[in-house]
Amino acid sequence: MPTSQKPEVVVITGAAAGVGRATVQAFAKRGAHIGLIARGGPGMDGLEGAKKDAEAAGGKALILPADVADATQVEAAAAKAEEEFGPIDIWVNVAMVSVFSPFKEMTADEFKRTTDVTYLGQVYGTMAALRRMLPRDRGSVVLVGSALAYRSIPLQSAYCGAKSGIRGFIDSVRCELIHDGSHVRLCMVQMPALNTPQFGWVKSRLPHNPQPVPPIYQPEVAAEAIYFAAHSKRRELYVGFPTIKAVVANMFFAGLLDVYLAKTGYKAQQTDQPASPDRKDNLWAALPGDHGAHGTFGSRSRTSSPALWVVMHEHKLAAAAAGLLAGAGLAAIKKAR
Image (cartoon, rainbow, N blue to C red; front, side, top):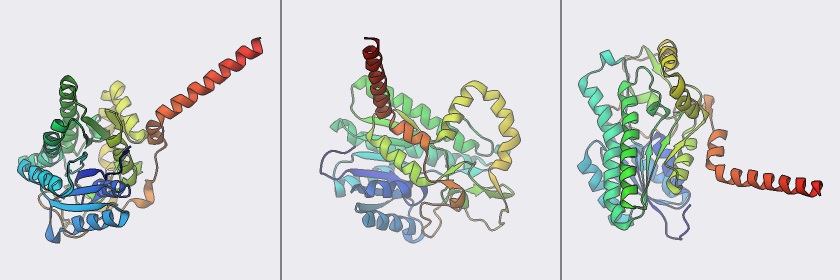
């Protein structure tokens, strides 16, 4: 965790809504100065809302409209953030888009757009961050992944491919940093299903409205995991037991999961409510309005994760367990005497 009195300088992509918006709030309440990257959209309502959230929580914020699929725009945003706040300490890649559709019905442009934002957006963000952090030999980059980086599901081929690609990308770059003796840290945070506005605006060809596959967590759980990851030395962090279960199950039962998800994955990703023929999506441009951090599944969402708590406190738990074992050992020795 930060030890100096100087506010941390943080840049967050996808800051206008969902996990990005919750992450803005998590850093702001610790007094950070935050660069807010997202597509501007009509009136930039989401970015303006994120800035108000940050300032109300005790931080400072700078609006940086940019499409993360454009490396030039990302680089310009990074430069402006440092011009306003000083050297960037932490960069968090959150921005994403997706398409809920059978692959056979997707267009090449849709697949490319999803890849450009969800995969290359994190590549370009990491490039901009490392360009500044490496000469200073300090800083932290957090890449937001998903359980789907390990276990793909039907109807989200482009998104699953992008998240898997991020995992391959970060592992390669991390090896290079270790080779160079760099103190810059990279961490990928693998998320469970989250209650964000994504499901209300994602492009979809499904007959019913999309939903996250239960169990569902509130975005604040993800935000606290990201904050922890940015200040830890972990290479990877799994959020929630469903993520751990997906990773481990796929290691041993990938073929069985293929069949299981073929039978259950379509229905699990849809509500009972028929999709509107007038449904709008944000694949190509941001939608107007301030959509905040939360989606419409709050009543079904968990506000905490015991599994994440254990992961975040495992060193303290290990020390406590060692202490108990040592105490038990001493007691046994005394009794033997």
